[in-house]
Image (cartoon, rainbow, N blue to C red; front, top):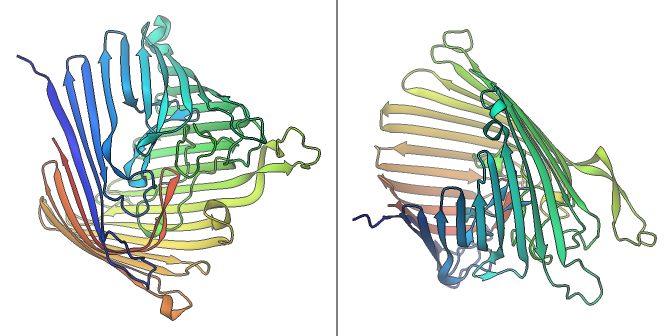
Length: 522
């Protein structure tokens, strides 16, 4: 008898805090804070159901205040027939590139804007995909006040039209519309209670070439984010890529104007976001490269990026025995070219006008990144990185930070003792005359075997002009991995800073203490 299948995963993060006035780590009254998650998924044939239990006792530092206590904030049931799929309860969804709608979970940021309601997906004919939904967004252990309605449709031309089935050119056309409803309770302003956001998109690909474009238009949506102006919003995204053996090139550009879209006009930070503004800059992983992370500016920005990957062939002069890979990425963001309107004559409260394709003079961000990967023999391999960054702290974080110019170098070397054992050395340096000035970071990681690893690291602001404010942010960790289970214990210090994922950020306070992380899947 088939009783169905049960799958799931578990994660627990516990931090014990030690007060440290030298780095600004405040005393935590509870001494220990805890975040825990458990997903349980049941499937039988065309039926799927699941729950997620969450526990914040209390939430680790830096998490949004709405995450407190325990409960089951996520539960759903779904049934899929031949052409129809119906989901009731909580769900995540994205239309196109996310310019009109993207609900998702990013646990490290404390971001979860899942919808609670009903979603219907349909494929009435081959190659035609439709989605419709209605619901309210999650806000901690409660829901936001706005009601969200959305529809998305996409036609895969090569599937839907018989004449295109065998064509090399693959074409996809799609469109979406999302509206939110929120009561107007403002005593002074007349606010729109229904706000619509619509978009059209096109994807083309042929052999090694692909093109992706989307344009979105949002009607006036006065909110805390835009100072309650009544100007409509627009977003345009264009991405092109070409890839072949040993070579890849990607070009991206976007124009964003007044495109903050939330189910609550008064929400801030990462709360109740409905759409997603893609960050086109390179997403870094090395610690000093993420020291000044870029956060997408939904109010106005012109962003662009270009990335080139090339592999020198084996046995060539620069390739050597194993070949050499090089990656070059350049990205940047500026303000739009705007003209501010006189508040006395601006009776419609638009605030400003724009030169549509004009780029403003204010620089938000620049990142020139060069990475070289080289395997020397069966035991040695290395990665060498150089990056030059320009960071407008006034815009990205808060006024008064000024413009920061930095040069970052990274050397990552690995020596493999045998198939499952290796020693890795990571050296980083950030040089700047602004902000906290020069930083250095060193990490030594030893993978003992397929189960055990240990690591020691230290981040040091050696360039601080005030000698008494130079601190070592050391870190020691050990971990055990077996199958789908992982346990890691860490002791060390964490500097205060901004932590970002995909252009969405949160502030992380300084801390000192012990962290235990456990993850498991079944």
